[in-house]
Image (tube, rainbow, N blue to C red; front, side, top):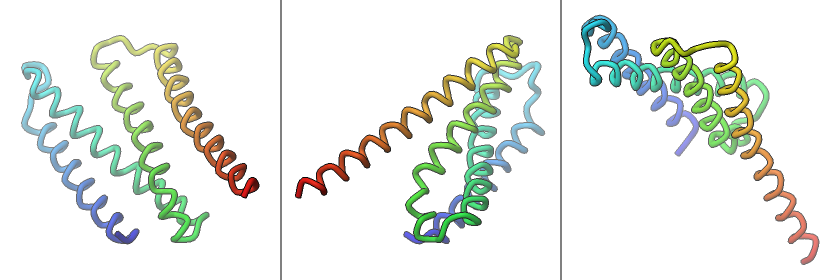
Length: 137
């Protein structure tokens, strides 16, 4: 699958997610809605943010990397955009529950940075292990 196919698919799905978010905002009263309305709000918001962050990261990384390298970086872009979108949605969710404070936001941010660092450390260790095996041959 080419990078252009990924790009078009992400654009279409992001448009659909933001359309669902718009429909949720305009048709559901947040003061009288049930759990299904809140789930619809947060899921469509998360998916819309996910697609938007993916597109932004692809754009900025396309300025740095060649197309072949960018294609290899897609799992990293997807993981980072997932974490960023989760952080944004969690912030709005915590504000909706009236539990958002600066220290709760900071704790969540630190947890997500540690998760990303663990992925990075595992990747570096795996690459070092592969290089060690090549030297032994």
